Image (cartoon, rainbow, N blue to C red):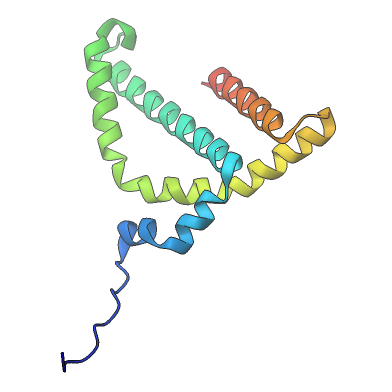
Amino acid sequence: EGGPPEAPEARRPGLWGWLTDPGRRKRLASMGAAGALSYSFVKVGKHLVLTTIAWYIVAARTGLPPPRSRAMLFSAYASVYVASAPLQPLKFALVAALAPACGRAAMALGARLGLSKGAAHATLGLAGGVSLLVLW
């Protein structure tokens, strides 16, 4: 009635505020296939690093190859995964930083091989996935 006008909702700080900001969400959605490709690379790379750390922990503790103590490997992996949870915002920042590079790489690959944009992204994703598996 006669009171002061309601102030617009203040932006929430932290990760939740970052994810709910309409401008950022629009930019993230505009990344398209390059964003999905960079997310896939970062996600697979993260799991490769976590698996390697868990593998080392089990091998150091037991002196046996980790496949022989599978339950301990899964337990170590879960512990390392939970311990890495505070790094999630860094993962999203890395995805956003790599998206333009993935887009440029896909465009260059498409131009060089005469592929469409979608086929270039798929080829780059497949080649990157195979490379990460070989490196691990």
